[in-house]
Length: 453
Image (cartoon, rainbow, N blue to C red; front, side, top):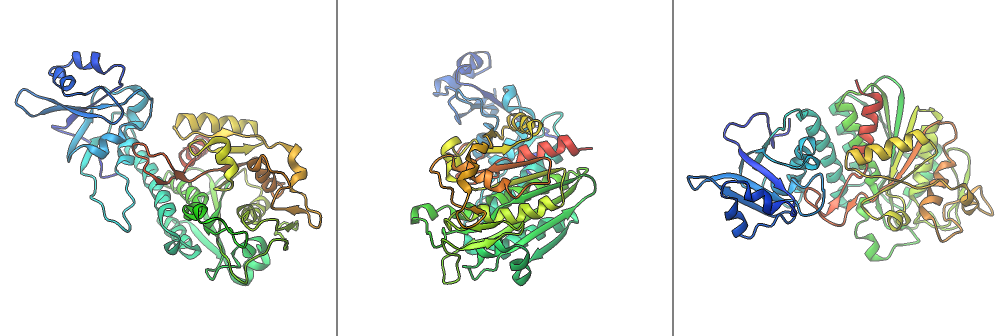
């Protein structure tokens, strides 16, 4: 169990939480609550006050929740409380129980590879009925993904992403294989083409684990995206270390699933590349034959994510998994459509769509379905090849990208594509500015529900 959680807590200090609307009435019912009101406590989000005891010590702390129903609001207490052991007192249902435990751990997260931070000293007594090992497993893998995304590209290229995948696989006794060099160019030509402009060799990373129905996770691993010869403006490159966020997220899901020993045969595929500018980089107008045999004209070198995913999805599809999931930081259009906090997903499987929407809401890891609208299929056509990676249409970019990927999935019965930001731009308690594994908890909940013991 995570060291910030305690199995028992003799003399633990009570931690209450109250909404702004209930704060005045709540404090009026509690001994010395008037002192908190007099000090200005109004239950605003993140506001923290102490209730003294009869001996001038602290009997309890009270956290303000504001007017929202943030399931992880208690992370603010973990971020602010002094060292000690705390146990939940009166807390609204929406932020209690398992949510409280996960929030507590999220509040202790910090990316400290380059700037050391004090380790969290406050501990929370595990709420009754909560599986501490499960919460700790979810948090550890969530933090793994955050760390991978937050690591700058000079320290997180294709080789380093491979090392992270190997470390996770070794932790769970999984098998790892990697395709590079001439074998990559022969068998995964689109992955090789995207990575051709960088001295950091592109590769396809594969993890295999477990027994049972085959479930395949594919994660976009573009470790840095300059845009290639169709280069991005400098402002658009500032967060492009996160373009491997799909890979980080599927590694997080895999870590959760393997740690829980789910009854499945798990396959993870990560095309790891760097999209750079050089004399060997792919050019606008180039045509490449994909692994599937479809030819692709390069209409824009900055639409590289769908290229690397195409070859990986084609490989995954050949094995006809029971469930195929790909996760990618694929389009700005998805961010325009649903913002940074509500990643869209695409699937033709109605049952899968309903499950993802339900579990996203249940885990407070929300997702929103967008349509695979076949009416836009003609926009990805090319005059000289089977496909063009730059749709001849200025709208619906997330949909046309999903349709492009769908051309490489023809044998798998159930496939879903998630277009995530892998980034937090509006910090909240337990969710600091920076990398995030959007959808990881929802996807794990899906796998656990379908393949759990």
